[in-house]
Image 1: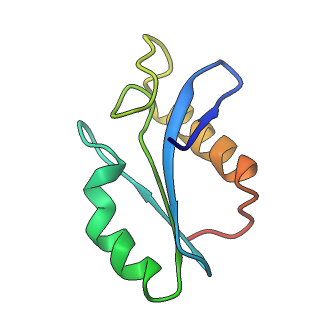
Image 2: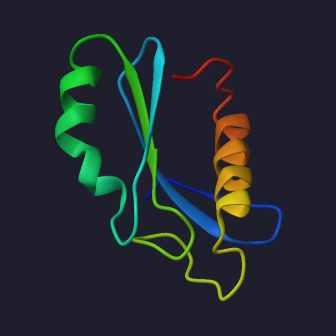
Image 3: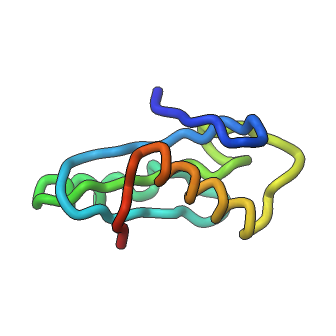
Amino acid sequence: MNTITTKDGTSIYYKDWGSGPVVSFSHGWPLSADAWDPQMFFLASHGYRCIAHDRRGHGRSSQPWNGNDMDTYADDLEELFKKLDVKNVT
């Protein structure tokens, strides 16, 4: 299972499919990265690198009591991009 650990110790699950220009997918409540599988499959098979993650408190990521706000979700995504060495993303 692909996971990173954020600076506050939260485990974030992610999918990283394909290669090429990066497209990022972020799910809404109460979904998970799986919601994007059809779009990711299509784009990955057409020359894109597709990254989706389960936000903290969702899916296969940790279920912490804190950090369930948009600012922390954005910080988690930034940490994921840094750990995957993603420089440019759509």
